Image (cartoon, rainbow, N blue to C red; front, side):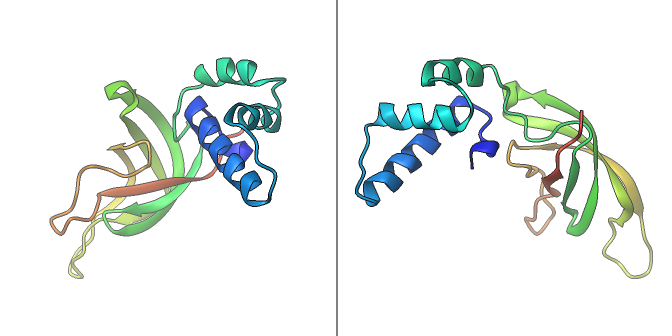
Length: 149
């Protein structure tokens, strides 16, 4: 769990989880003690240090070079992130993805339209606000492996 923590809110949520786990096992701790334990889990000497460092970490769900997978216009895909741009103060991200294999975006059997690259706006959770006529998000994307930088 601690390797997935990239910001202060996630660390606080982990402290709440840890506090509940310890209370259930008969070893209750205060919230401040739970924060200190989470800081140590993350490799910091104390909560103040962790809090200061984590507040500077942007919450960007995808990075350039990440391997991703998901669905684009209802079709499964795998690919690599070529570009990411934060928009609306982090409420959304414009992402360019190059597909490993072309994706046919037409549902008709009589013809095809293959795409190899797409630029789309997604939420921090990787879901586009744009939807097909039947309400399915245009894109649902998640990281499968991080870029090695």
